[in-house]
Length: 116
Length: 395
Image (cartoon, rainbow over all chains, first blue to last red; front, side, top):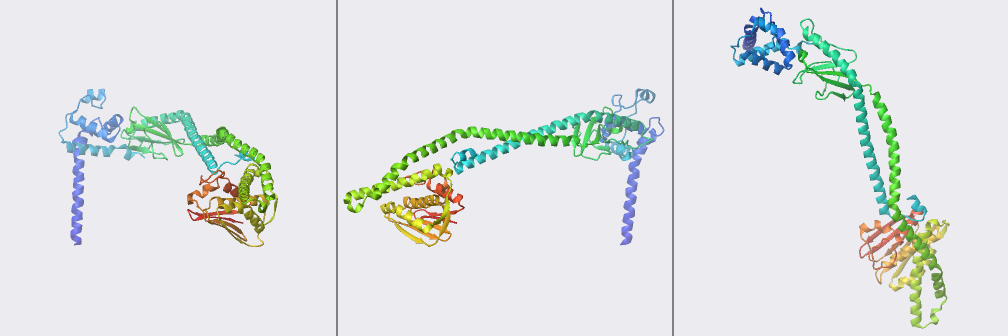
């Protein structure tokens, strides 16, 4: 009986961990993979969105809107950066995955969790 | 009211009650108005104080914003929220969610610019650029409440002065309102005084002359007529005495002496006997010897006379009057028409009468009540409709 419980516990821990890694992979594979080598760092983008949209809801909504339909009007990049790097292409992630990736992104850079 | 008393007049209980109610209501309304004014004054002073603090807090908010701006641009180097000696602060996003706070009072009103909450003053400022995501910046300072001490002192001093002025105005207003009533009472009293004065000589003359007539030598018809005159004269005499007491009673100094109550009651019963016989009333006496009372003779006579007079007046024909005198109390009982329980309290009011068919001014029980009050005598009335009334005087 004890063995069964231990096995179930181990499996569920492994499952949750795998899920976490998978979730993180969405962000890492689809966002970090390009931006870590780009001059346009993700933390800089985050603060650009924060200074313009303020709340979590507004920032996430603006990010989804831009990633699904990138255009000059909704971009937070400076003119210089736009000239240098150009607009990014449309995301190929579905809504659910895109939301997951953005949630991870918010959690990573959310200032209220990092201020002390 | 004091003025009324000094002129020998007394207001009815109901009138006094009305006046007391008026004064209470007036005082209550005055206090409500004063409290309302104090509340407005407090709010104005608070607004003044906040206005005074506004510029200071605005400067603090500038200081805070510049630090937040620096932190926003250098977040990778430091994540330490700026702290200040003179004030505390907090930042909120556009959804009014807290980002970070060093406030003592956590409850904030982001839709107001400046306000006092508990011992603190909050200043809220909206940002154009949302550094660190902050749309609202809240600056907090501690209110030393020095201004509140001044406000409290002023409210108390001015409140008392204004209340006294309002009270004086109320008294003046009341005097104006009472003037017509006072004048009519004075007029009535003056009339009673004049009338009683003019009645004294003829009534005394009639009574003395009747007493001098030897009725045994008279014709039966004439004797009967003389008896009627005697009854009428005694009734007038009794009314005269009542009116004199009411009109002058308060001004006459009491001459208290030891009164033999039994002897006095027998004397008064004999006086009223002629009137009682008209109604064929049986007078039953149960009088203890040696019952003495230290009292003014004229006043105790008025008390007994009025008890007797009422017992005769409101009695049925061929009924009875029972007078019991024991050590400590006097009881006059009749087998008359009686009064309702709820009317007993009003019986002591001057001019109150419950049976219009009988004569009189309704002064009897009022006089009894006044005398009882003066000498601390306790009055108790028991009455049942159509069975009778019992008045007990205890001392």
